[in-house]
Image 1 (tube, helix red, strand yellow):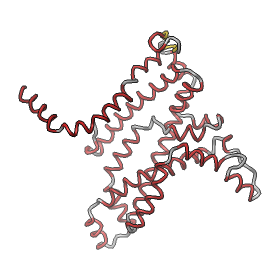
Image 2 (tube, helix red, strand yellow):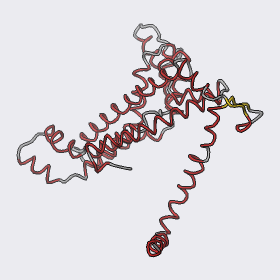
Image 3 (spheres, helix red, strand yellow):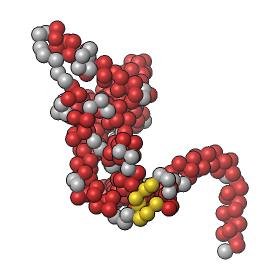
Image 4 (cartoon, one colour):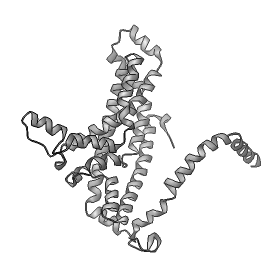
Length: 307
């Protein structure tokens, strides 16, 4: 027992430099992620700002009862899952196709294209939303100006939720697919070139090499990336939904997700108890999804196991 403790102590001393590097991230994680956890008790209280978190009266599960009985939970859950599944499928499909196409062009061209489509990833959703307003504004929007030019009537984009079923996925794709594409491309150029040389000898076309070599070789990476995204299915990109749809409440039936509902409950409605209840519901389901996705992935590829 003593020898084991000595070995562990020696290991800590030998790697103290690495531990020091990890220390800031550990401190930030504890402060930001774990220290606020006691605040979840607000979900079970009639929160009063004057009394504070601990002295406010208990409400039991009344916040959760209202959340589920009113149909709000069903609506925001459906919207959250629908949007995030759409984003996952669309982003990974386009990112992989772009990576496969870039794999057959010169490195100089690749650098140019990567700069072009990776740039939106660094833009904030605030800037992207202003671009959206410039496009979809009812009075001076670019799209409405084009429609008028061709003798068409203006469209009140922020008054109809249906167009946003296409606009939001395209906005998310424009901003996010560059990141995934770079990952796929990096994995592609690391593949064994002998596989492609053998395929060339056999007279395989580019399409055959993509489906018979590239995509099967990327399978472990695809599984891991999708697994990570599945774990985030219940956590939407708040900036996208809030910044793009804050201009109109008419869009809420389609665009209101769990994250925006938590924000509106706290900031707009002044109901911390409801916000905490929705946030706790989101966290519990997200944790279950992470565990389930990991279990499912290990059935197909044990190398992808993270727990």
